[in-house]
Amino acid sequence: MSRKIKIALIGYGYWGPNVARNLFKNEEYEFVVICDKRNDRIKLAKKVYANAVLYTEDYKEILSDATIDAVALAVETSAHYILAKEVLQAGKHVYVEKPFTDNVKDAQELYELASEKNLRIHVDHIMVYHPVIKKIKEIINSGDLGEIIYFDCSRINLGNIKNDVSSMWDLSVHDLSIIDYLTGGAEPLDVMAMGKKAYSCKESIVFLTLKYEKFLANITSSWLSPIKERRLIIAGSKKMLVYDDVDVLNKLIVYDKGFDIEKPVNMEYDEFVIKTRSGDAIIPKLTQGDALYNSLEHFRQCVIQDKESITNAQSAIRMLKILEQADKEL
Ligand SMILES: NC(=O)c1ccc[n+]([C@@H]2O[C@H](COP(=O)([O-])OP(=O)(O)OC[C@H]3O[C@@H](n4cnc5c(N)ncnc54)[C@H](O)[C@@H]3O)[C@@H](O)[C@H]2O)c1
Image 1: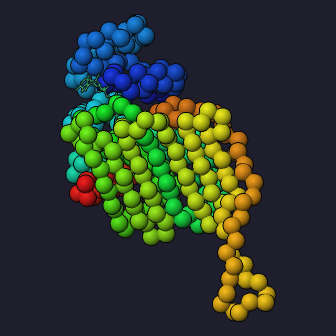
Image 2 (image 1 turned 90 degrees about the horizontal axis):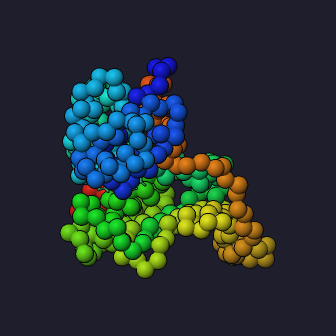
Image 3 (image 1 turned 90 degrees about the vertical axis):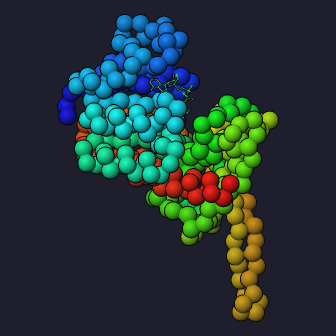
């Protein structure tokens, strides 16, 4: 496809305006319609985009417009499945916010529908398109960290409690997508989770622990924390790194820290000395770029080049399987 991709957005609540801004910024898209069933949200959108796009409260108008190639969904998670299904049935490619759906069965059905119709599904696992995560992937692939021993992820803050999903489905899905991407789709052997429902009918705090064949992952998600943390620690056998997204200056630091195993010459044959190593800390140079812009651009490339998204339905299903398994533990 050589022409511009004609795209519409459904959902202009909290996150939709960010999707709209990035669609508008990308001149390779022809951003044509903003839809929200709430008139107050449409009024807000009109203040920003005036006559640059069309507006509707009825998403069916988008589905029946044969000239629209693709639809971006920024609606509540519980509405993803039904809307994505209708978009695909209308013969359009679909960009869906994370998490893809609220269960594996629906996600599988959408995957099969898209495959049947040769349409693209792109799930906005936004962290995969983040410059810091791209850099971490480079570092891991270069062998600099050695064998990964564990991931320790923390996504905690006060507020924004949701009722249609737990903190784990809302927040930990980001960390699961990071681990999935950095490890080339590794799947856990064991899933453990503990959580607490407070101020919501779903869990507001969850401790999720995963055992993979070669490493462990500990993932905390919480809407009940007095401080904000968006932190990832990866410990490797050679080096370790910390990605602190809240730190404005030093988001990513790679530490030459770990343990060296030595066998002194005068010791018996099975005696070793384990010494801690505390070398330099390096702040790698990062490329600039907006993760959401990159995600939407990747979706566009997939549509024009007729190729699978890195964060396609199958990768999203791997994450949903973990979340469903964890729900049973809760
Ligand atoms: N990628 C990220 O980092 C990120 C961040 C925040 C939210 N999200 C995701 O974005 C999605 C939306 O979250 P939110 O916080 O903006 O929710 P929200 O409730 O603030 O907004 C959803 C909007 O969709 C509209 N809507 C719902 N069903 C509709 C329909 N059938 N037709 C037209 N409009 C409809 C609602 O009226 C509402 O304005 C969720 O899936 C969430 O997980 C992603």
